[in-house]
Image 1 (cartoon, one colour):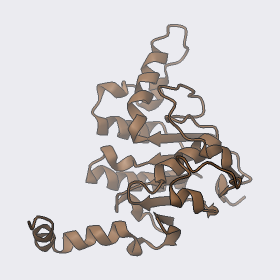
Image 2 (spheres, rainbow, N blue to C red):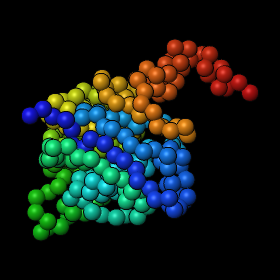
Image 3 (cartoon, rainbow, N blue to C red):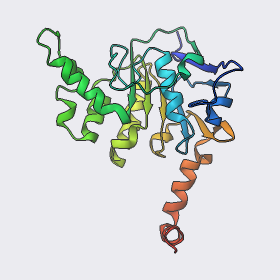
Length: 248
């Protein structure tokens, strides 16, 4: 059977009397109707404040992942700050059942690492969780090393992986390596949904890219994205760009 992904699309179904408070005060969130996911890789991009992380979090929570990250087996709550957006989403699932899955969010990765250490400290806790992450405490590695250990060891394929700004701890070289690893996992029947600011992470071929702006959510091609054009404009002529930026 051909693989068509684990989730097909997400729709927002808001009642007319919905509050205008966060996150429904974000125009991009309030006004979108439906997003269709690529069976391999789907990206959410846009400036800060457009609702990328908010939407990604809501999709993850709606699917049963912990709001602070992890697999569906994690249910810790360091600080309950996630929005109610997940209650208004309708996600259409594919015919395949995922065997693996993970929600990675950079801002609460420390909390996830702490939860793993705490569970593994229980003498009656069974097999060590950290063995699935490379065997070394994520707190005993640099931020970048711990991200990389998780990505290389914990993601096994046949799953849905939701990543919120995974480039935040990775060097350019590691971002390139991550792109190659994404492809290996895609070939193992994996599906990715990624929010990113990185033109490298964004470069996976034949992916669906949604650019979020105050005007709405639009599907764009890689070289049409603000991410690509801004980086390219700077690198093509850094002297001119820095002269403009630093001009009093």
